[in-house]
Amino acid sequence: MTRFSTQFLFLNVGHLLDHLFMLIFGTVAALYLYKAWGMTYDELIPYGTAGLVAFGAFALLAGWLGDKWSREGMMAIFFIGIGASSIATGFADSPLQIGAGLLAIGVFAAIYHPVGLAMVVEGRGRTGIPIAVNGIYGNMGVALAALVTGVLIDVVSWRAAFIVPGIVSIAIGFAWMLFLRGGPVVAPSAIAEAKPAVQADAAPTRAALIHVFSIIFFTTALGGLVFQSTTFALPKVFDERLAEFAVSATAVGGYAFIAFTAAAFAQLLVGWLVDNHSIRWVFVGVAASQALLFVAMIHADGLIAFFIAVGFMLAVFGQIPINDVLVGRMTKSEWRARAFAARYIVTFAVAATALNLIAWLHESWGFEALFIVLAVAATAILCGAFLLPKRV
Image 1 (cartoon, rainbow, N blue to C red):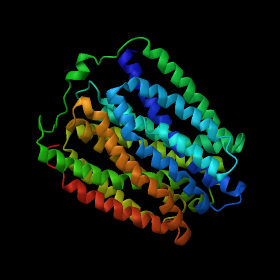
Image 2 (cartoon, rainbow, N blue to C red):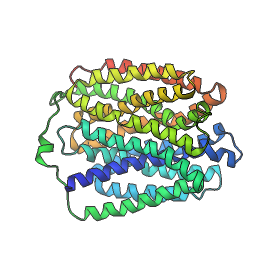
Image 3 (tube, rainbow, N blue to C red):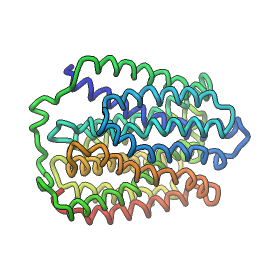
Image 4 (cartoon, rainbow, N blue to C red):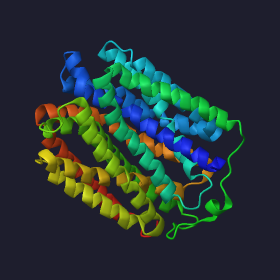
């Protein structure tokens, strides 16, 4: 394996861990902790809000440090910092303490998207497939968060669900630092020179940049709400709607793992499509399928609900590489990390509202209301996709 490929593997594993750590609490809260601490699910989940705010708020600082100081150094801080924060969270004895731990996890988790994605696209001509592969790893982190957390709750304790992944992340961080001692990593010429079949103009005008980035931020904001709501709430949705099949934390986590894993590979198809076809029409197709499937999920139950959930997660995960490819194509290397940071600030600033939204809707009307809101959001994303220029 070349050093370029090894670096890509480290970056992919980092994306997996980033999403895994951000969703451990969702499964723990949904399946165990609210009972152990004598709270309702709706009362407990808002304690995760501070971590989601930090996930977005610290992205710009992380991107600036990556551009001005060292992207490689920031990744070392990411691996070790998020691992140590997760271990500390595993020793929490109250909702406030677990909220503080989740805040620390969010601060370090904020590093990955602006820094890691800038490193993924650096030196590459075609970025659709690499971003898609990296996205698959991130979504496997979502899937493993549900499965690993459910198993550790049943076999060991909820504390182990935070502590064990934390130890693994710190070990990977030290391995990353050893890798960096081998010197700088340069993309092979064949990778650097490969160009997508459909490209944006070589030098987009200021008006074109404003137009495209306005759409990116608009669809990113709503996409962040959709992504966070579906990934955070799905274990609880399965707990309620698959009651005859999901009879333990491991079973609920297993169904969520299957749904997330199957959906993760949608990014590979979307990555190929955006390298070979108009992003605009790929985006329209993905957004339309989201809206239709959320409507179908409003009253779905049993195994039908499971298969619809797999379908809408395919569309939710499939949307992720589209905006990342747009950012990569429209930006220069020297400020790309900050551009990704701006995108993810928008993503997770809006996503931070998802937990309170879920709690309020679930308590007042159940998950039927949540899927109505998500269908409306997906329809708005569809409208934004139609406004993209034809050649991007």
